[in-house]
Length: 85
Image (cartoon, rainbow, N blue to C red; front, side, top):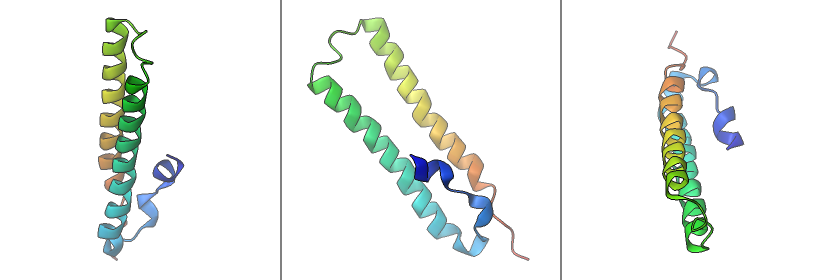
């Protein structure tokens, strides 16, 4: 998580854009995988059985919003590449 949020496109030249995008999307996909595995582990351990249906729905919506926020933030950060001079 720290690696993802400290990744700064403004310090990367445009010619390294493909490598930077690969690294950045690897960060995003690893965060997606981490969230999925945490939620799967909680469900398998029975930790979510004590949660009411409305709270489970709220948890799903919050997780979905967080992951979509990461993608939107990533797309916004992509616009910060240095231009060729």
